[in-house]
Length: 242
Length: 69
Image (tube, rainbow over all chains, first blue to last red; front, side):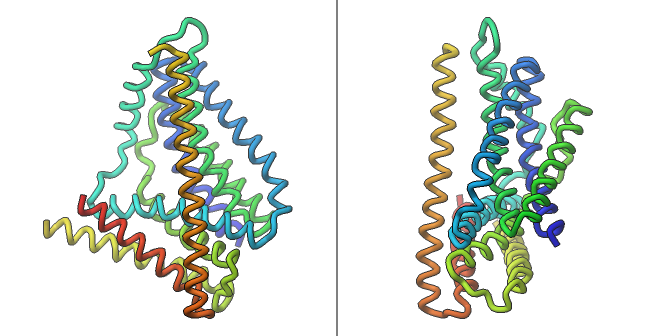
């Protein structure tokens, strides 16, 4: 159960975030040099790990209801943001994310960075910022999906680490942005899962007594994906009429 | 732009992004708590589903606004 509820969504969500961070780290590395790019990414990774190690043990002391309300709300926010974007893309309102175009834009902005005599701080800072922002989402998602207990937390962390290994390995092998990852399908699927889990946990945290207990979770999942598809169809029909 | 000035601008942008996220999060928690209190007042047993329905109304309105732009 932990594998399905925590590890799989954590793996898929982290995959999307790491691919986005990799695009920037690669663009900076190929344009400005690997030393600065990797230093920035590693520094951000160390800061994120320190945050998990620092805050993780403290979370056990937080009241269960407060914890679920806070983490559930975070999951719901991330999920809604992802689902919103994915529905607009499937509905034909917004273009699909083009990793190659993002990479080209990243290369252009990396070339325009101020030049330094010694260590390339500007390039390191860009790499640091991209990794930190994408990584922060991964940290929150892992903490949220691991909210059910230590087994779930370990499963979610394993999912995220596996995604990191896959993305870093693939990026190291091809030295190109991972444009063939089905980013929108992943965002749609994971966004729907995060929305449903987020609603369930934030509701429990606030005091909701879900009819049927844990059975409400599959009901929320089915409702989320059903409504999302209705929205996509509505937007597609609208674009055809327009 | 000089490296130091660029670095300060980059830090300012990062802090601004994080502050935006924190404010959005606080707004979401306040909004959800308010919705729960209202939903609980209307129906104790189905308060969770009523909350989710409200969330979906907001999502649909936001999608509609984005599609019109």
